[in-house]
Length: 230
Image (spheres, rainbow, N blue to C red):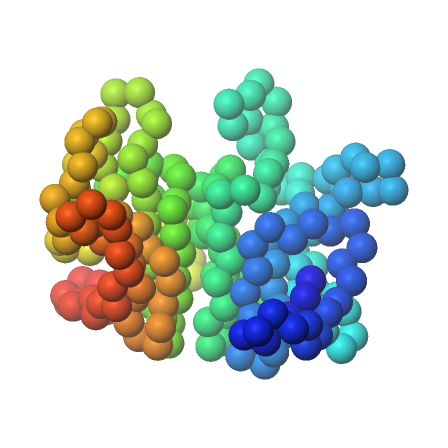
């Protein structure tokens, strides 16, 4: 992995060996977290190797979490497997947040104790299993966007949700953000201003894609919280 300046010049780099990083975020202390996949010298996947890793540009690998065998699932297959594509990792002030696409899970790592917790995402509100974005605000709130579902018989919608994960409850809630849940009709463009996907967070604001007249554009928005989402 390589860190560059705004001109593209390399500032720092770290070797990851057989680990291929797919998603990367930089923590407040300058270390880097990544979701990826490890292979051995023979090119085969290492099912015992962690898919979530923590690196220092100065000293290399610091921590490894989630052996691949624990995040595999029979997605569009009769046998369990894993790919990091479609998963997300985001660095917050005191935690690292991960969305695991294959198992439809939310994961948090405390960056002080390095304790890891896992939750299944609630499918009562939304059946979409493929996220299109993940963000952690400065005050620690977690959001994810979900695109149109490929599940047969399910309503085709996209929207923004706050993820509420509580210790002791194995299920993390997905709370819809008002004004962002919209149906998707094949072959039709959504009206201008419609939320399309989450790009990231900037402080306590979210950066989102919204539909324009002929294209989409980025907007910085504040989420107004109700009593049930605080």
